[in-house]
Image 1 (cartoon, protein in one colour):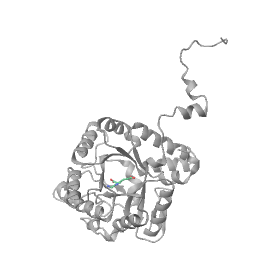
Image 2: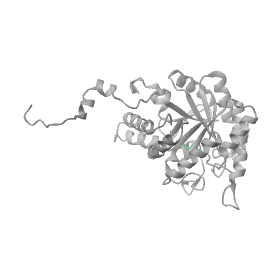
Image 3: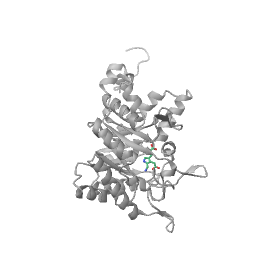
Image 4: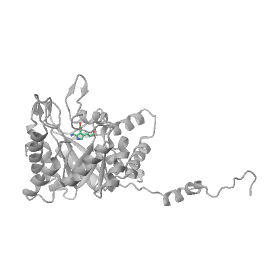
Length: 336
Ligand code: PBG
């Protein structure tokens, strides 16, 4: 015994003594194949960087195909598409959402024609298309979004996107009963291969701010909309679990939690309560917070990005939507 040697039966630091032992004992492995890359599409030619999301661009249709084939080559399995619609094309009922000639349907069919092995996920909600920026139909008398009328439109939107070749439709609106109605409608059109990735536990979060700039959502007195009558109260865990279990019953294929980092307990609890795959969406504000701190030299953004994603996977997510997907896929030094 050395002088000053404690008499310890366990020394857990032995687990961490070298890179090799740490590598052997790694419990959570993050890989590029776990990540889904969200992509923004614009009508304008070329690409445009999003001010509130440094490193993230809106792409024209032509650019989109290039980006998608590179992502596929680098091991990304799926992309999630979001449109940026010019203000003058929006209306109160978001009618452009049902137009098969719209930006998203065109993008879906172009990707499936040119890169058929890349999975395409499309959002089902009206917010990129409505002047008021809500995910559904605003009823002035109710002073609220009209649930059942909205579900009727979203169901049509999902069927249209399924017909264009979307592999998954992803209702992100949080209306009651939409998953069941969409499943029924897809099946009655013979679209049995189209899956539903349900935004099941979607919270009313301030972390969506940069996304709303990206898709050009309406602001009121400088602030983005409050969606508290349909998105979940950030303080409610049981209610989030209830929403996820309802979506499972209604026929969802994958249950999603959103945002991800501030809601790891929700991911964990849903993981404990279902056998379905669980996805998590690391949203725009989570991305931009890390990137902005990195730009200020306050932290190492690569390390922070990977740590945040490992934490999301460790909590129980099988799949992660993240704006870091593109840079991680392209950078061999990331060594996930
Ligand atoms: C629209 C939608 C939103 C996001 C994905 N789909 C915004 C919202 O609900 O206000 C946010 C994604 C992000 O912040 O990265 N229903």
